[in-house]
Image 1 (cartoon, rainbow, N blue to C red):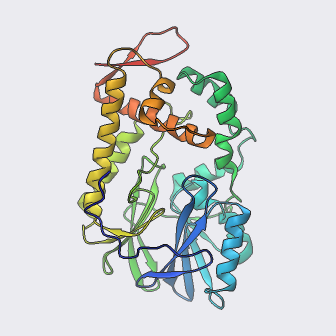
Image 2 (image 1 turned 90 degrees about the vertical axis):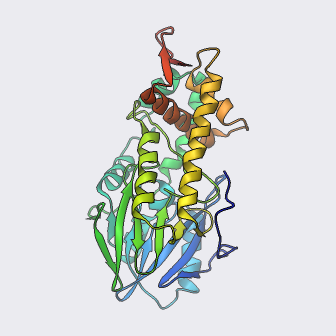
Image 3 (image 1 turned 30 degrees about the horizontal axis):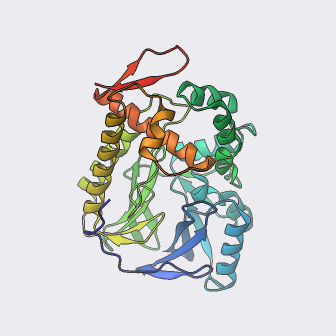
Length: 344
């Protein structure tokens, strides 16, 4: 994806244990992740009597240690007031339980994201393997690879410290008051269920979470619980809504990567990127019917580990479902156990 139209006012992220003043009354903290995408961005927003934290980091010892370094270093003597969590993914909600227990922080979160966090917290240890196993097999994933993905690829979902038993619901269209400033709450689906984003119109700052990121595309996946969902269609509609309701002059503070200017250009590039992926799938399925597992190497030609395979599989199925909804791909009658698709 072409990022020529984007500008990056800050060229380097904060070092471990450091904070960077990134916008008026907002500080940027980066925590480590044990994946190819090796970090997550958190933001501390000036609030009455202290600082609210936007997202928490993954529930790992490394993220706890990074928090400890900040609290004992540049944040020493200051107070955390509350935590706002954008969505249920463990790199964003993973330490919510730990921060609540340690500091008594109350949680602000969209209802679907909170309830799904609870579901994962109280799910069986296999996180629904009996539901996922036929789901993966139905779409052509080899039995041995399926077991590897279930045992290792889903480990990501276990890396949380839970969430508090009570929370404050935030919804699309709400106004959140932080330190005397007003932030519009926007929500969008596709990457998550109802991911929260914050806009300060006065300061021209957009806290975008994972919905709009520079240089990489947020994962948009379909999962076993809702196998026919057009997640990509939901995501593309959200991008259109953002373009219509958030000005192009905002400073975008994303959940990963570097903060940037050029929101509308980035939205256009993300839409084009997903269009190109649909074209790749259409070309692959033109001469013969393929399963989702067959299509994955066409879209992701590099070697994938179990974690990446789980994400890639869900992403390909999201594109397949979107193309089925658009009528550019058709299901083919197979052996009754495996679904295949062919270009119209």
